[in-house]
Image 1 (cartoon, helix red, strand yellow):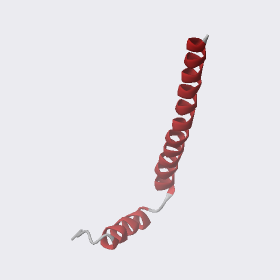
Image 2 (spheres, helix red, strand yellow):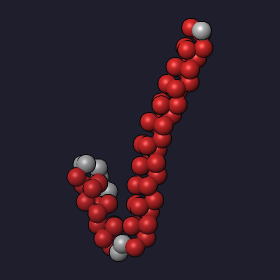
Image 3 (cartoon, helix red, strand yellow):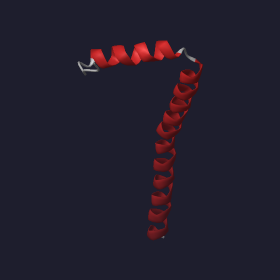
Length: 63
């Protein structure tokens, strides 16, 4: 009897861990899709300037 209780606890624990790790994956996928589609709609000069300014903000040379 004790052995089956331990197995059920482990199965439930594994299921809880799997469902909690799914949320960040879905959030990252949704954010990535948003960034791709937002970049497709945005003006290319605006994207270039934003990337250029971000590189300068991190003190990364780009010229």
